[in-house]
Length: 113
Image (tube, rainbow, N blue to C red; front, side):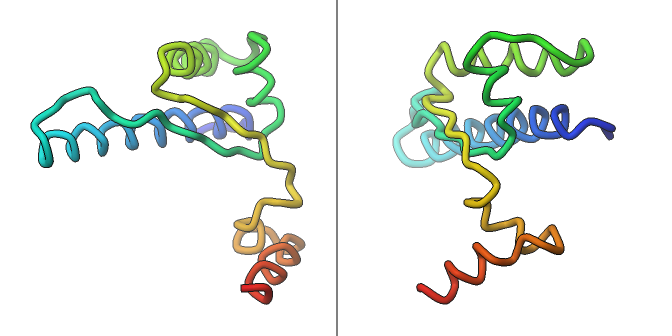
């Protein structure tokens, strides 16, 4: 548990990236016997401060948060995280499911098909 939305975003991104890499490894083993030949990941996030921390080498937060940021930077440097795209809140469709005032973009996307 964390009391910081920044820490939650960092931990969530790292956990999601690790899960994607694990899935790619399993798929590689099942389909062609390869290990470690996973596709590079492309992450999307709405935390501008996390995006800035990864792309501009700033450091903030607790020791555990800084370690997670360093781990994410290593994945980025080594290519397993190929791209991190920041999306402004207005493009976050899931806000309609988690925030009382965020349903506009989700409704518009659903209406447009």
